[in-house]
Amino acid sequence: MKRIGILTSGGDAPGMNAAVRAVARTAMANGIEVFGIRYGFAGLVAGDIFPLTSDSVANVLTRGGTFLYTARYPEFAQEEGQLRGIEQLKKHGIEALVVIGGDGSYHGALALTKRGFNSIGLPGTIDNDIPFTDLTIGFDTACTTAADAIDKIRDTASSHQRVFVINVMGRNCGDIAMRVGVASGADAIVIPEKPYSIEAIADKLKKSFANGKDHGIVIVAEGVMTSDEFLKELLKYGDFDARTEVLGHMQRGGEPTVSDRVLASKMGAYAVKLLMEGKGGLAVGIEDNHLCTHDIVDLFDSHHVGDYSLLAMNDDLSR
Ligand SMILES: Nc1ncnc2c1ncn2[C@@H]1O[C@H](COP(=O)(O)OP(=O)(O)O)[C@@H](O)[C@H]1O
Ligand SMILES: O=P(O)(O)OC[C@H]1O[C@](O)(COP(=O)(O)O)[C@@H](O)[C@@H]1O
Ligand SMILES: [Mg+2]
Image 1 (cartoon, rainbow, N blue to C red):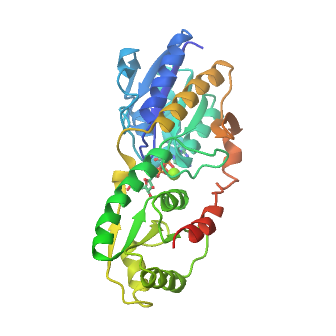
Image 2: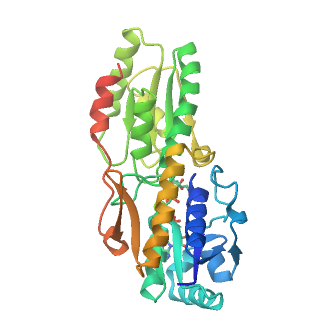
Image 3: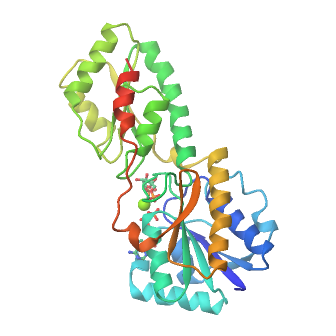
């Protein structure tokens, strides 16, 4: 194999740049040329493709976002988009591709593999919603950023003895909410995957204040409802002095944590080794601290399963 391509797709995630660097440098170390593709599958179809040198990936290891840019480009689900993408790959002499993105991007990677272009998927999404991997690139950073923001909210909540209802990201997945909730000592964590009782949460907050606690933090995953909607319901069960926050896209930015930099580097290097072995249609994951692969096609029949034991544990810890 002489030449591979790389793109980032879907929502950006801190550590994507570190993964691109790892792919590029590993390929170069093995005598393979690397081409960057801008704007995900949109740029692939448009032919926005350029050679990467060792210098092009200098100083990106520590940077958030993705210097290759990203896009949501639903047209790639159609045959026409895929065929045009393949024309571009052929035109540039690219024989195989690394796709860094979430579940949607994996569909694109699989479609290309089925059409004869081996593609390897790396899990780049803050949501941690990909099956067969304990962690996705960007999840640790997003949780760290959100926890940092909530620490600050807690200071002002305590000063006024207020309740804050805070939305965190995770389209349909409660992993960010659970991890951030535990890390920030939230009184309650509400996620889309598990049932909850707003009345029970209100009772818990009332008891906490009665016991002398000076603040209340409720973390609500965005997939459940907005923090405003949640507060409206909460106020039916108690007369709280309360405010809402939506942390939003700030969770996707910023320098990747050490964990994300190392995870991205390991996965990027591994992806190149897989392509060199002639493999494609695979998703890279990490399970019990070991890199692993699964057929992308199997991911679509599976669901990510979070560590839901954190909910009960957190309920005991936050008093
Ligand atoms: N069924 C599909 N077939 C081919 N490409 C797809 C498909 N679904 C999504 N994609 C491509 O992957 C991109 C990213 O998907 P999206 O769901 O937005 O983000 P993520 O990959 O982070 O989950 C889409 O904009 C589209 O270009
Ligand atoms: O940036 P957008 O298009 O508003 O999308 C927001 C969504 O993207 C995410 O930040 C990341 O999701 P993906 O990695 O699947 O793209 C979700 O947490 C959130 O629901
Ligand atoms: Mg997704």
